[in-house]
Length: 72
Image 1 (cartoon, helix red, strand yellow):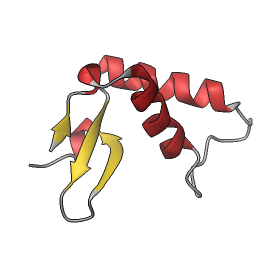
Image 2 (tube, rainbow, N blue to C red; image 1 turned 90 degrees about the vertical axis):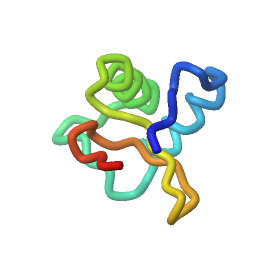
Image 3 (cartoon, rainbow, N blue to C red; image 1 turned 135 degrees about the vertical axis):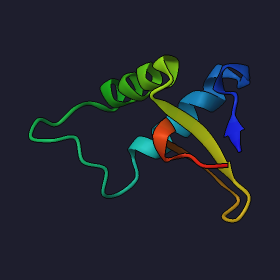
């Protein structure tokens, strides 16, 4: 289920995004970026609709994924 991220409290959204970018295995290429830069990148992707915030009932967790990979 897609979570309408605009309806979340800004602090909650920031926490979800930070948790996402801090996961092990997240690769940002040759140049290291600060946490703030990574959070801003994900926020821009949410704003543009490139990625969506998704609730998984199976895993009881929230994830951020490319819109094209989300299937109801």
